[in-house]
Length: 123
Ligand SMILES: [Zn+2]
Image 1 (cartoon, rainbow, N blue to C red):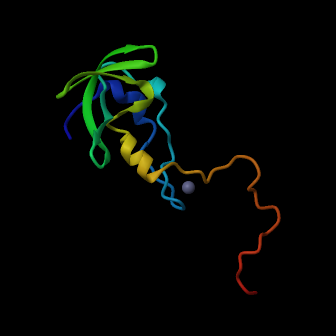
Image 2 (cartoon, rainbow, N blue to C red):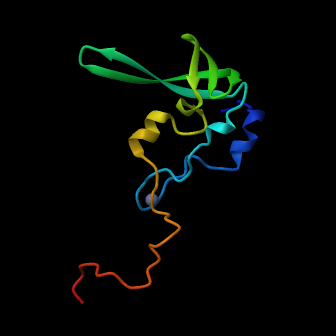
């Protein structure tokens, strides 16, 4: 990848591909507020088929941002999407994210092991 993406410098600080060792979920969630113009993004299209729904992931470039919506230019033409349905290409696609899920291991409150819980292991 020789592509230089200056608009992605904000993202560079966070590794959105990072996965949890325990549950394999993604550790960082992308904040849709960080979407920028000219950013290369993934979005998902859903088509209805005779057997249900088919999801496919597409790539495009953000050409406009207005409120909660972004306009994306892609091979298929121009599409308007809600911010929440769009992720930069450096971030796992919505499909991947939905499939693998998010890490829930880090719960700030409780879960601090003050009392050792029985693990089921015979002592
Ligand atoms: Zn986890």
